Image (cartoon, rainbow, N blue to C red; front, side, top):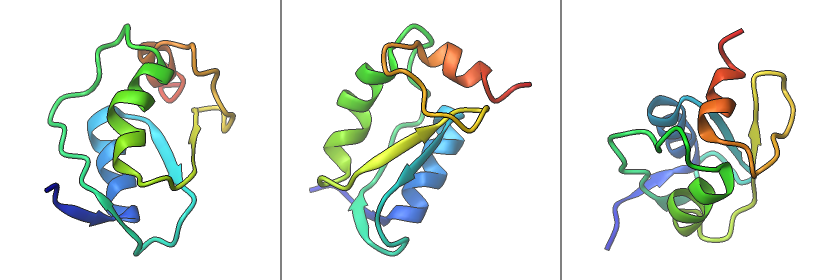
Length: 89
């Protein structure tokens, strides 16, 4: 059984590990499975692949959105490296 953390802690961990902004559409104190990854997803991983493997299984069905450095919703076929670079302007 996975450790549970609050949605706000989940969002913070994603930002720390992955270097991207993910907003979960739930109360900040709702509990979800821990984002217990120590290393960021590979640069050539698509956003869709990252979401399918690392994010969706942990959120228990809560909706979410990714916000890039331009405050827009990126295309899920985009590579993580490209997404991360959008914050570095």
